[in-house]
Image (tube, rainbow, N blue to C red; front, side, top):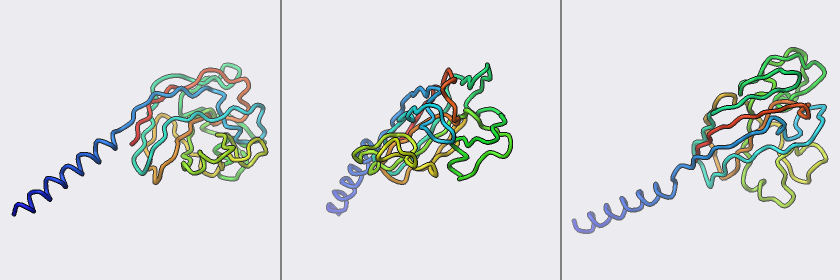
Length: 186
């Protein structure tokens, strides 16, 4: 019976220690209106995506819009869900992620987007948080991993890595403003 009590106390100690080391991170991040990571086509300037949070293992990551707006040229101002715009003959970052070109109006231009990059890639020599399918970096991010965040999103990180944030736009040289977000993760 005494051994059972010792085993239970030890098990509780291990659980408590594990929970303490897996404390939630809570960070606030500003994503400037020109941070498109050079995704999409054609692009005008190369501005890397913004690192938001790095996690050491599996867990839930949540991104929540706090404030801000993006003007994507000519006084067209949008919130984190983006706006509707005719970008025929262009490919915004989320369209590049799908491998398609715009043939219609895009409903989420200048929206908040993200990509989770495994730690093994982030720590690789030469890594830069820009489009890895173009010739600007020896190790970059593959467009297929980009996803819409908008006003908020929760997802499961399956491994250690870094969440990068950006703007769903291709010609960002005339953009201004940005979004402040709260990012929570393990």
